[in-house]
Image 1 (cartoon, rainbow, N blue to C red):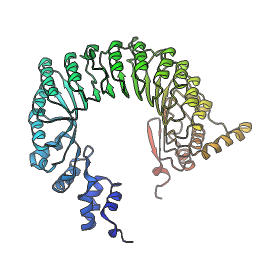
Image 2 (cartoon, rainbow, N blue to C red; image 1 turned 90 degrees about the vertical axis):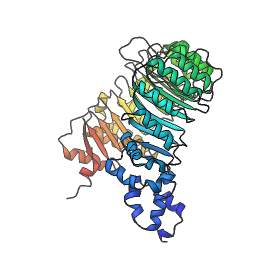
Image 3 (cartoon, one colour; image 1 turned 45 degrees about the vertical axis):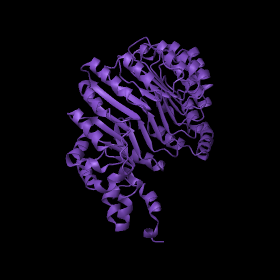
Length: 498
């Protein structure tokens, strides 16, 4: 069957596997039929120009009169956006609803935002970065004409905080349908957030990252119940009472980020466990140099595991009292965990073994603790067929991974065979602080037949190209190895032309 006899919807499905540059440079040049499908279809609903060079952007720029009518989501650098405005092409994006500008606006922010408002009448979602809060005031004035569903702005430096908060109050009072709000500015005040939460009754996602002026007073009198499903309080001064207000009001909360919040303690975690029974994503990061903050005692994790048994994504970093007992208390109830990140000097083989025994759904694990032995690491790989990413720090004992020796050989071969029969899905392994040798790497690729990438701090093999080539030949899918910061790729050893 001739491919040109395929209906347009089938060709569109095939072309969706190609990059935007491939569509512009190659596919659209084959014939008039392919040109019509490649440039006039739903392939252009999402247009990501972030990684486009100036040359690539110029090529895309030439086709905007044709593809612009389909674009609904645009990710672009500010200098490229200015190029659109200067050439009047912005008006060829009549259906643009989502605009993300990834770097800081180049200046004249109010004028830029005025152009955005005039050019994209259907805009409902925006993300941009502004250098000064004084410029933010001008942007808010321009944006008052638009009803947003998603509003995400990051402000680098402060100017007049009082004026900023006053303008933000006026802006929010005109937003009736806002669902997602993300503001990153140290100039925001508590009263501004209180008014926002009372007015934006349909708000579901709230991000107040790096708002150091925010504390628990922002959440006094929070409407109960509220519809918040995701809250990010990174680098704020919220304490336990503020967390209690949020948790008790937002019964449907599924995502909570409390990173670098020095005024929180284990009491706040217990409030979360008591009220947020539907929580699925929890991230806790403490500041290493500060002794206060969340400690995560074993009894705290027992309460957290019992109350938040639906957790799927969990990060616990720099919590001084986090140990093996606490890990076991947690995972006995949180058996649905898929993503686990743990960093503590008190985690050893017992804690990692508990994770391996109870969390059978893991596909990503990143643990830093005491030295883990080979048996524990082997148990983890053999019993988690869905595991895609493994990063086990402090594995100095892994250099003793040479298990095929005399009486142990038969036992290990049987384990390896069972692993292969289970089709292990481990594709990427990182082993920081683990100086493993060639024989250990051979065992590692035998453990994981689907392995694509290995990264470790070992440097024993850096000058021995034949040993590196041998590892690549023993693994069918291994593409690259990072040894001591030096990258080796399969194509350099296996596919190189003579």
